[in-house]
Length: 493
Image 1 (cartoon, rainbow, N blue to C red):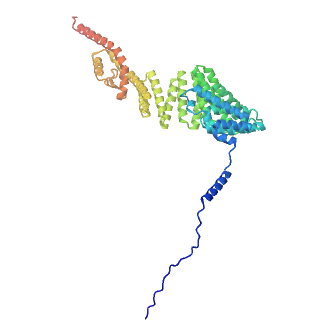
Image 2 (image 1 turned 180 degrees about the horizontal axis):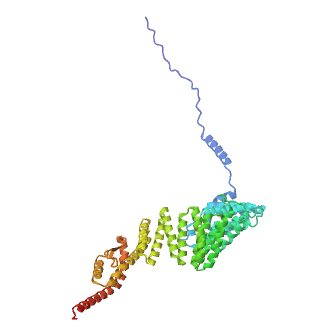
Image 3 (image 1 turned 45 degrees about the vertical axis):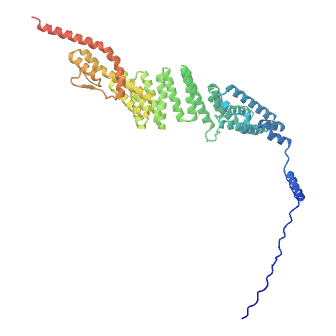
């Protein structure tokens, strides 16, 4: 089979389907670029003179100019005045004051924005005669600055709210009532109790016959009663401190009436308790008992063991001042049981101290030591060093008093055996001692802890110093008497 000869090959050239663009000339490129720049310049909005000034000038200046340009002259004047007062207060406070640590008002941009927004809206509403809207905008500023802790600014706008509320007549004076309540709180925070009472009383009278409620659902009347209860109580404390007991009692009686008017049993009980204490301070315990009985009954109804304990303690004081010690002790012992069942360790400690003190004064040293011991054991878990030290001193005094009886009897006996007993006890200084009246029986108290014995020994230091001479004299007299008896026995009949 013959092989065909190879065909000759030629270079095949394929025509390009896409033609390459010729590069533009430099002149053309410049022309295209110029067109793009012109289009971009046309798309950019040119800033006006005012807009340029807004971004260029400080915010304070821009806001003031904007207010004046839009015709809000009153808003401009108020803003400018606030900035001046702020700066004056800052300078008066000086370095180290709270206001000095803050930036000047004109540098606090968020506050300036808020002021511009609400002041201009309030001014516009005032021009239209819509005082309700004026009040809302001023109240919004007061709340804004209050949340920031800027009390000076918030107080200023609460005052503005009060002035505006005088012109609102369509809401049965509700806004005026709320403005009085806010100003009362402001005055109370600054310690101006008389001014606060005036505003709270106005708030009460405006809400007495209304059913208005706040955002929490409470009636305005109950809030007004609570505010007056609190302010009358604060005034009475100040009066009691100044020894004006009668005025304090009058204020506390008003506080009790307000608590009853508000329907709050807890406040009523607290007011009755304070009134009872005031009567005790004024030397009228019999009247105090009536108020304290009210507090006791309310505490029982509410299941308030702390309040019940306070009532028992106050009742005990009232009865004690009347000389009714047995009844007084009964109330205190009742409270001890209540405190134990409710784990009121602090109140239990104080009541045990009170009972121990009463028994110590009455000469029942055994019971006094019992209650002081209980007070000491209860005070230790509390960890209050001052209270623990106080109980230790009371315990030591009571223990010293309990030891005085056998010591004095041995000194009075003044015989050899008694002197030996005294001498043996002084060597050991234990809390166990032989009582010569009870032959062979040991007079023993409760064993004191080492810390308590230190208080006991401190108390006995003066006792032993005073009785040292008596012991020596008693020994001498006993020796003389023994010698005389011996001589009489050997003398001739």
